[in-house]
Length: 387
Ligand code: FSA
Image: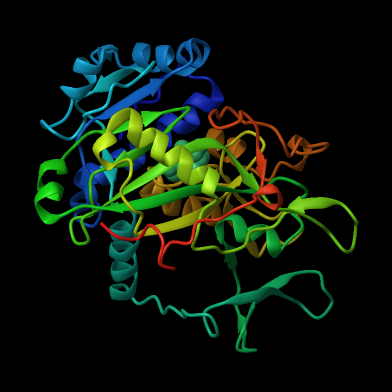
């Protein structure tokens, strides 16, 4: 949760991220809806390869000069309560920001925002029938958007329609290659209640090549672990154009190669958990824009359609700021520099390389294709789900 402050020396991109961090940071720290969900436990930025360390960790350390350098296993272990980190941290080098950073309980934040919206009079339709949008609704002459159609066959008319469906947004509209649905992978490891107490309030260690984990969930005691990599796509030929594009799908398992990476991450950091069965796994889709800046704009051809997508792996931290930007854009008062950065920008995606790493590292140092995955986990099917 960087208490970022935009400065006049910022590039347009730096200003964009500093400004939304400033807005969201204030909400996470002070807003009664969001602040209970923010855990300022500290954050560790790290890498293993010297070149990636230079590329991303050194600049991070410069930005936060009070952060503490970590290199030896003893230094790493000392960042958390005794017994949490027992690994050798082979090749790991990082910097530890003790203050002004941490993690947010994303699920709780969505529930809190939902409850507040209901309190303010918003009506929600949810579920796989009445809550599942199957298409946007076009005006009779096809020149405008006037709502949406749901799986139960209902049409919902609206003066303004906001398309904010994450990676699925790409299924509803021709985004001219501005969105690349890309998936990451995560698993949960169950802890006992007393283990969970030991792991409480731990900082978040993030290794740009290996992944990260955050403290156990307060209710379920499961610890969530993500292996970091450039992402998986699922390329499918578009029946109309013949061109391939990535299409999201749901799966409650992860590739076995991802399980192996998660176990390697545990082996490096918490080897006492490296063999423990997983209790949960998911692939998790995001929509990457070409420059990994959000897409928040009115559609140039359909002014009644507002787009709020393209989270590009940055969506959680700025959550409280995004709604404000969307409202500002709808009311025509979005800050000009933010508007420019988040605009509809197909010119950026012409000849888009779907296999671009987009600044990420890990695994085989390439974007992976789900069709090439040979084996998936079978969590909940009698294998690897027990403590
Ligand atoms: O919005 C977020 O902060 C999501 S968690 C981070 C992450 O897993 C990245 O590490 C990954 O590279 C990808 O962008 C998905 O999100």
